Length: 267
Length: 296
Image (cartoon, rainbow over all chains, first blue to last red; front, side, top):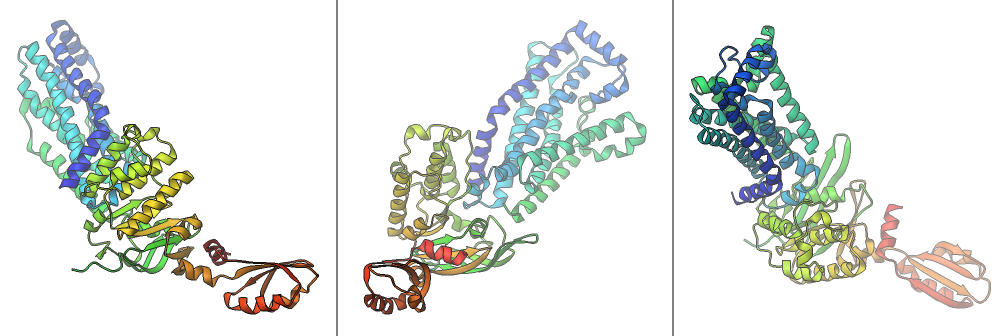
């Protein structure tokens, strides 16, 4: 347990610098969305623009409330926007790739693995680091929404509705973080792990997008993890059980795989 | 339970990467408090052996027991092992101090020897406060030595330990190893620098293409080597008349160089005494001679 704590501190030290601007950026972005939602002229313009936009574009924003978009919906767009997803993806890819494959590639893993540390501790510490990093980002994003709506309340929009969205955002990328750790457990270089994890994530995102735009691909949508992240539905109807269960199950399976692979591989 | 008299035991240890054999059937024992040298050309399997002993690699065949524990079964023994990798790298943004603290915390032991090592290797507080990316190769090597030895290990595995060190620091390192041995630390040293192994080690193993070529004490390996006998004469002599004592390495009208086994020396010297000898030099073989002989 002590070695996990020591390794976790090590990961925090290595990744704290990029985490700060990412958290501030996400908080600012979600705050801006509350400002946009609270500005009648901007909101009206955005509503009409969104209503006029082709469905392919709305699908990109996970915005299915094509008719009658509300201020609540505009704030929700902030959680489905590619910018927010990209902020989370940076940590979900960077931390796992650096923690295992990165240390092996840099040859610093030899220094750590030659000490009385179980291989399981390396995977556990990487998981703890990515979960904590993503939690900081999700909290920062929600803080942006909360501060925005408290400082300048918007009629009919409650900040409480976005707390489960932030949780779901964290869960989705926690699952990607776990997949990133499994990928990293196989790789010898951080670059390899980054390429594979980013590729899988991008592929999953494109599959979800394509399945929403083209009905023929709709049956494939459940195979994308992004299918289980629908901020607008969570805002209006709350969290669905399968949206929690699927990412949790996939993440758990990925971590189990990482434990097995990393314990048995050559470093 | 009594400590294992052999901190390192390898039996039939081997490692294959696909069709490539990096190490084959290595069987050896290193005794408590011994300084054991590991020699071999590039790609002989020295680093692979060390990485197998530490459990960084999984053996294809055989087994290693370190400090009485099977390497594949536990990790607790690593707390008493210090390791200096040959191809060493640190975290560039961490300072020297942070690096030492982090690696010490992972060892789970107090860094009792750190202050003394830093002093002997001339690494000051100002250097330790700098990020490792600003270090020269020599400073990184010193930091590597300190991280390996700071927690007073019972066994140290050193891969090319003096790489990048200037002669003064090499001397300081040899003194550190001597002191460690005085306190009963077992040293396993892999090096290309034969004079270093000769100076530090009691016993030596030589590897070639993943196979153990020979193991023995430095003295026995040297003694097994032929002496170089250089004789100069005041008048011309027939070098061929001396050929039955050993191999003639070079000869001239008044000059002969012979490679002679130790037991042939008395007879040769007696024979040379009957010739018009002006000068005689008998060179003791070095470990390097033994090494070159094995790899020729």
